[in-house]
Length: 284
Image (cartoon, rainbow, N blue to C red):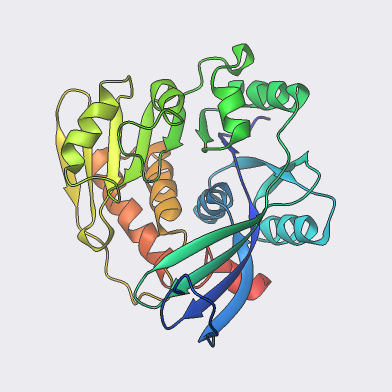
């Protein structure tokens, strides 16, 4: 039986390093305050939170025939995520340099190979059988959004720090039914949401960090939600958790306001752990 949700996009093996300050662009030495290895990748984060909320899903992600790929798959499956691993010469890997104040520099030290035509077609067919598809910003996602085999399944797309003008994001915005983004690239979230809706989605949602989130429907209806309280351990993956919480609530029949409240609570659960999802603390 097909899953209710298909998630398409990256999973990575990440080395997270906490520093007093982000490095200056000059030769020097710093001592790390903390460091650990964990699963990363925006699609992995969404899959972990949806699985934790009991949503039937499958994650389609490129993984290499290496130790990192095996670690990712094993940990995700232990957390209840069904994984369809697409062949890649290598597994994606990042080094994230972070500060306790929230600064971050992400270094991509290994990237997966681009999917071939057969993998794109198979992923598009998997999307066509699902109730909803979450398609993330990557080569695989770009290949499937316009593929003739993907059918009419609604696409939910996370635009991250979209500025309203990026050419790379354009086909994703136009293919989406629902879009999520953050306010990093705008001083006017409402205007940015309106520009997204003008391209075709029925709903656009912008997270505002500690200020919560706002949402705009195609008919102009506005919604706001405060951030849920949390003792912040790490901010990585909070946006993915927010989107997962909103989607899970929507699948359960919630309206926009109730789904936003559920999303805020789910984001708080990610903030309280140094992994993408609390379940990984025991697994890893």
